[in-house]
Length: 110
Image 1 (spheres, helix red, strand yellow):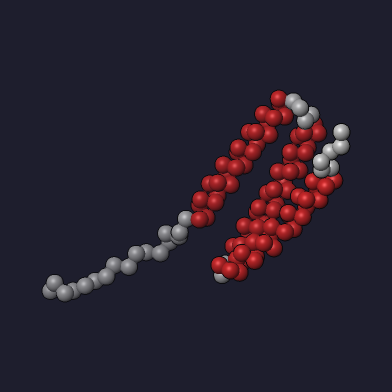
Image 2 (cartoon, rainbow, N blue to C red; image 1 turned 45 degrees about the vertical axis):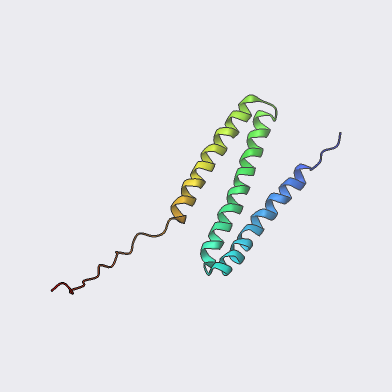
C-alpha cells in the first residue's frame, strides 16, 4: 500500500507554510493598514506550525506512531499550545484601555 503523502512532501508543505504565512500576514495587514501586526501574526502562525510539526515528528519517531503514550503526550501538548495561543489571541484582539476617557466639563448648570 502506497502512502498518500510522503514525509518529505509533508516537510516541504510545512516549510512552504512557514514562508507563506508571513507573506499572507503582510498582505492582510496592508488591507487593514496594520502591516507590522499582520506580519507578526503570520510569523507566529507559520513559526508555531513548523515548531509543532517538528516536535510532533520527534515525539512520534521516539515513541512510535501507534502508541497510547505518543497520543497522550501529543494531545496534552496541542491542548496546552492551543490554549496559550487562544489566550494570546484574546489579549491582542482586545481594544487598548490605555487611553483615559475624556470627561466633558459642561458648565451649563451654573
